[in-house]
Length: 408
Image 1 (cartoon, helix red, strand yellow):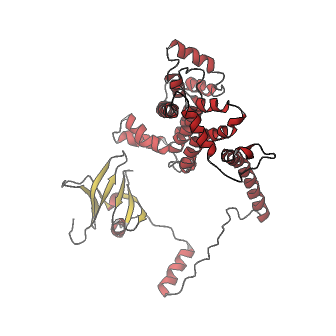
Image 2: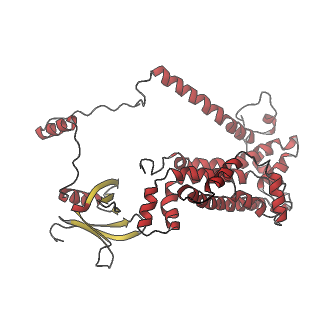
């Protein structure tokens, strides 16, 4: 490379198989090459004649992400400290790059800039309408309907939190107020005092629930995802029949399968153990069904490209498939956590030291009218964890899959 026209910047290089290298990119008038520290041979190298497309995303400051796609579909993703500088240099020397179509408005704007005329930018409105062909009355009606549904959904949660903060004299008032006039945390303190009087510490119930929920959710995620990957992307005898059985299992609730689960756990000698709750969670059909439906929308070309690059099946599953179906497995985690966290396990766990938090809190609720405030506080604790998990992961659940715009 010519030392005069050479531009370089430090950063990272990521290949399509997920491998990352740290080093620096050098570019001159002929092409570019990425070198790792202490290695004279480049990890990746290309000439501008081989380039098919090049994209640039500014990360903030001078840092940019540059994606280079060659004509043989080889892809390089670079995170560079001086990314814009490298991008402009390569774009300037890339003689046979595709012609960008320009509209008549773009050409008039370019000529106005050359003449030094002042260009008026269109005024941005504070509120932009997504459907300009719909009347304002239609917009108002839709928003009113959404507000009504939002209030109806959030009202039970607000009322429950308000009940947990009410003193006893406000709990029995009629009509019941939605929010307490004199909020207090006495219900929560009384709840912990009552729990502390049990011969099993409150922390023991909490540890049991966290352990069952974490192990059951992790096992469900791993087993359901691996099975869904095989069913969605590989054909084998009996695959369709197996998935039909899984779909049929979605019709049966936990109350229907309670007795068969108990008989199986009894034969395995797992009654009164944590596994009586964890193993059935591994086989929940909702996770397999959800993951398979998402993985079927993933382009097979991505998997074939990774396989051609030498990635193993497990590497394809872990580095290509799982990141692209992130909304699916986050949704599955919410379902699994909600089911395990709210499981009282009263029918399969008998030892008090192994019981869950929900069972202990329901026993407090059975204490009568005097424990009405504690019962409300216990319900807030029970619903808090699933709600918090959903709040922190909702952006990932609602986002579009990264491969939604790719056609197989």
